[in-house]
Image (cartoon, rainbow, N blue to C red; front, side, top):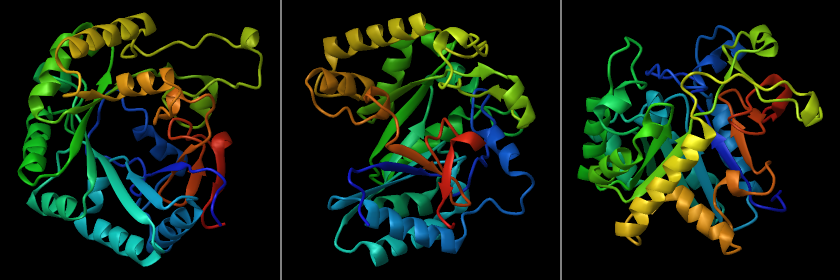
Length: 316
């Protein structure tokens, strides 16, 4: 049955599993919520139900799928060939769009051909020049990843795959906005995203769950009664992040209007003009950007994957 309003669902068919070990990643530790598992792969029955029900629930003539992780390319091309086949099976005349967020280190020509043929929009995680990127984004052996990510970017360009760059803004990169912006421009895609790293130090509730990062505040309690959270050392200072965006805007408006598209600038302008922003952080309320875990669990947001924020399971 179609929903009254369109909603977004971020699917994590590999759960929190990743081949990298980025220092600031808030999602890797979600493995602890599910205990020891033989497989984190979303099984065929859950995948089929997800594709079928998500298409059916969209009230318009389009269903936009988004895949993330963890690292979704760990599932391999055959898995996503199955995804595309299920989408065609259940499309019921609706237009299907796909996007996938990746660290880019596992991309090869097989992936390039698949992504191009099926018109996937790719989000590639790249924080800036080599030293800024490798300071935080390392693999499981604590080795740098910059060269592998750049090889992934080159592969996407070679296969004609549309992609954007997602740069996490942390306590280090926030100091060099012009250098980050100029480098990302040089990679060869006009679409840029900036995401602030804001993570809380561990708290008693997180400790009970086996997590190392603190969870969101309990909004049922009045603000005056909430203890101010302690932030991690890599979290970006809010004033510094604001200054970062101002300087990015000044760089963009001087040289790149109509040539480079910075998501947060576009979204802010849209809201200023009374138009939909396109990203949830500019909306008046949360609730239309849900997260789907590998086993069918549905959460209010991928930043709120905690037991008390689980709203159901596709299979029950």
